[in-house]
Image 1: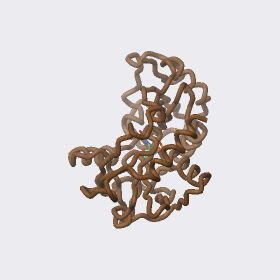
Image 2: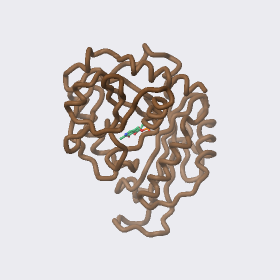
Image 3: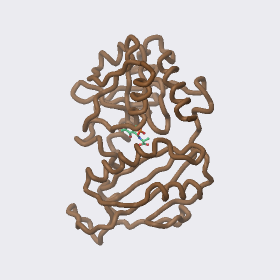
Image 4: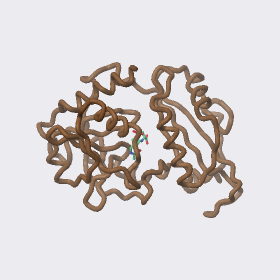
Length: 278
Ligand code: PDD
């Protein structure tokens, strides 16, 4: 397995970073997860735009030829269907200090791991998930894709202990998103999703779902979603780069509608499949 670290493509077990790296000490770093299908980045422009947004958000200047780095990394790992993880930390100095120097050199790390091409396997192979709803304990800049994922980890562990696969988070009475995915609800043929802002990550898959809805005459709106609205929905979906769009079939022990994968989900999944193939 080959990884990228600070300008070099090296074996994963040879890759080393400093114990004073600020990503390690403070979570002073941002990341992206980008799917590659048949060796090609999926929604790569959108991911790189969001990366720039995250870097700007924490004042890291890192000008690299991301496209070439990731392309080369994917090739060196055999191409095909891979999920690329890219992390940029502010870098390291010789001591721990909250204050950072302006001239720090970022630490850049990328690796990849295999993913299924779910679009190949079709509708039936997508399992719905069960979810709990739990308090969103994250900071005020969830639009920055920070590696500070402790709240996300804790809620997923909570889900696991509850025997389910997903955790949806609620803040001041409104649903925000899942631990590593965006949220959609369907009510009487209309698709709703929480508004984009600093409370959620602007998901690339979320944007694509809104785009596909728009192009195909499916009404979609960005609105506030409270717990009642969530539980009364005809369908609930979550979305992310690694999982595309997945139906949620049970929330806090209650089935969503009849507890089966919904027709509008199936339609969206098919639209996704077509989009991805073209
Ligand atoms: N997570 N919301 C959160 C909190 C996320 O961490 C993610 C992605 C998303 C979906 O964004 P996108 O559609 O661009 O993948 C929403 C990645 C996959 C992760 O942390 O592994």
